[in-house]
Length: 354
Ligand code: AMP
Ligand code: MG
Image (cartoon, rainbow, N blue to C red; front, side):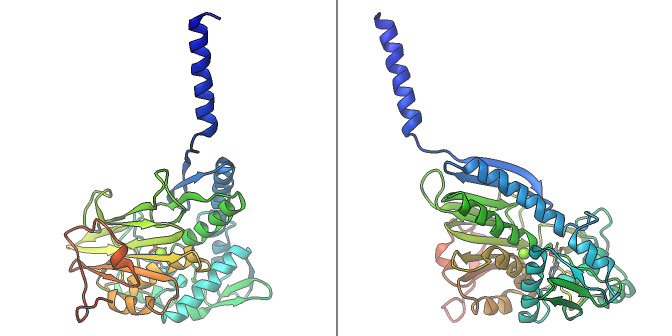
């Protein structure tokens, strides 16, 4: 064989060996689902299949909770509000409502999916956002109240007791969806990957391509550039959600009106919080959904009350930034956060922190 041919053959052999024994690389796919820029990353033999099935599942959940889909569960509930009729729901929607009602009870109504009439009235994030009149506010507030949402376990149905009521799963569905994707990843044997629903709810499995924990950037709540971080949190086999007053808001007369409404006042929550991040260990059942619910709940409760509430939740830890650039943390988060922006300082209680 001529030398040239031998060299080519050897080169080919080396290339083949490399491809066979090489590290698996991440498969990644992005799409807009649940009103969010979703990016799914997975590593493993069946990564592509896991991601394709997950994207389909996300669209399927979207169809249940999207008010713009005429046959969605949330629309059926709103259409039948005040008629006394029970509405049979998909098991997914029913489950979200059961957990949402549990947290409405636990937070004394700070978290309340029936806040929809107020969310619609303020229209934050839409092209008709405005500060409502006191009359409009009190009218909308009459149609809000988690005690007026009834659930029937036996028939997996629900009903809203008053005409004009509605449910808004904007503070639940993304976290629920993260848990569902996680189940699909498990079925396909995916051990490493990142389920990222617009940075607002995510789950990190195993390690990144470099073999270390996934590095999640927590956005700086007062920098316009979304790339500017308040801190980095290494995450592995944990769920994380973040809510902030910078996500959807408008400003009028120097006041920031954002999308997290305090159902008890009818106004965007003025609790002192700018952003809330919650982390759940993988031992926490429905961890994705819980972190999503808790970010909204803690935002409404505010740093002090919110941190106190979080300390009673097993496997859950949180970080809250307030308007004085203090960083309130529970659990081990103070130790786990890295590259914390010098703009922030940890809140201290009697020198011990929370
Ligand atoms: P998040 O981005 O997770 O904080 O969820 C905020 C979304 O939840 C809003 O865009 C509304 O759709 C909805 N929402 C607003 N205020 C509340 C509240 N107090 N309780 C439950 N859901 C809310
Ligand atoms: Mg949330």
